[in-house]
Image (cartoon, rainbow, N blue to C red; front, side, top):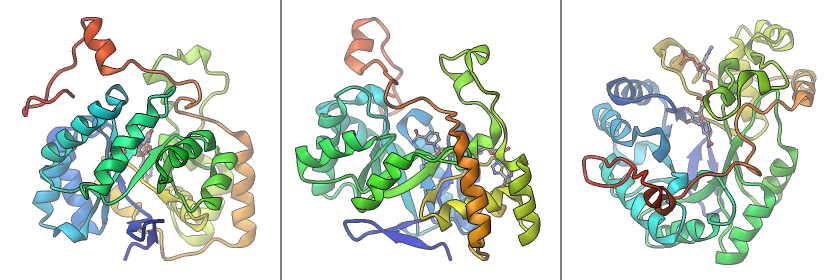
Length: 314
Ligand SMILES: NC(=O)c1ccc[n+]([C@@H]2O[C@H](COP(=O)([O-])OP(=O)(O)OC[C@H]3O[C@@H](n4cnc5c(N)ncnc54)[C@H](OP(=O)(O)O)[C@@H]3O)[C@@H](O)[C@H]2O)c1
């Protein structure tokens, strides 16, 4: 059984979800089906992963009933703004083939368009199309504005967290305001630098990016419990009260990442792992500076996005 956390609006969200970034098409459908049949009860995706239709297909193949799985998606940055968000969430529902989603997040704050984006999500939540709404990569100042503008605080904040990065300022705020923190890249993306996929060149990355699954402290703790380093890391997140959404394209590792609820780390082991977070390595973008073009700007620049098979912009 995967434990759940009660969100501030009373709905239950599983601590573990299957991450699907980089999974596409048939491989994505096959692995989502596998994850759900193996025991996962939640799937994490986003409009920008361009796999919502494949996730929907995997869910259908799993044969799970609607109340047996929890699906999260996120508003693609280009769709920020009130009207575009309403349109984009409707498009997601069509792609999944679902009438209601469990959780929708504003993917990144950007500059100031996250406010109308949040208002649109709140409207869809109040209309019942979304069971819960939240944020991703938000700092306290963004969360605070969301609550001030709508009277509704994001119920979840999905942020980069792993043994080499703990975002204390955000975590403290989440704990004070009953916001469920969920770790993205909980395994630090397997040590792979995500920055190289974006605008930053390898040589501009100040620190070499290491793999926490090879960290001697974690390897030793894994031996103590006869678990793998990945299982220790995922369990450590959950013991800290964070949700996790590990991604794997390998069936054995997908199963392994689920077997994390049958052991406890000692206070000493928790302290040793906490010490590793002193490094504060960030593998993704810094949300305070990350900026992106909006749909209307893209179209005006002659950069019109592709459409899905229903005719909606992707
Ligand atoms: N909100 C956001 O802005 C945001 C940003 C990034 C990611 N996310 C979400 O978070 C999810 C997870 O993040 P992520 O995909 O960046 O990284 P991650 O889950 O930390 O790591 C995935 C990497 O670790 C490897 N791996 C997985 N399980 C393993 C195991 N048991 N032993 C050894 N290696 C293992 C995978 O390789 P194999 O596939 O070969 O197993 C893959 O290379 C994403 O899929 C996405 O859903 C959200």
